[in-house]
Amino acid sequence: MATPSTSPDAPPTNPPRSNNLRNPLPLSAPQEQEVKLLFHKRVRGYCAPEIKAFAECAVNRTITATWVCRQQRLAMNSCMIAHAKPEEEDRAREEWFAGIEERRRARDEELAGVERRRAEVQKLMREDEIRRREAKK
Image (cartoon, rainbow, N blue to C red):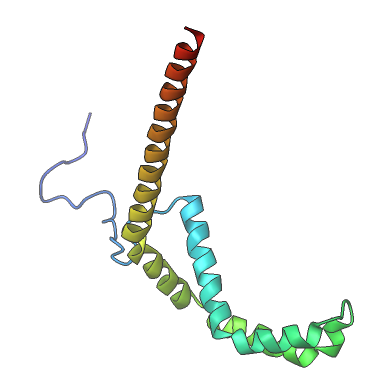
């Protein structure tokens, strides 16, 4: 029975894994959602004048806004399509990765604040328990 060759000169059976330096970690679904929100915010920022023009036209209109504000709607949609490119999503992803440390620091500060409040509440509860015991005596 022949066995596969495992000599050091044999080529690897698995293709080499490409390392994405822009996005070093795979993201979870909530993290991907944060990136998408950042991406959409950036695209809306680029198209703010077109969005504002459409919104001003659509004020106090319901169904008729589709026809009455057609020119503004088409301008807004074409701007959004022009800026909603994979390159822009990559920039949003890079911005998200750049903010990891800041978000981590903010989360740690928030947790420290919760712990301080918890300790304060426990201290107040102990003091209240002592007062109740003394009041019963």
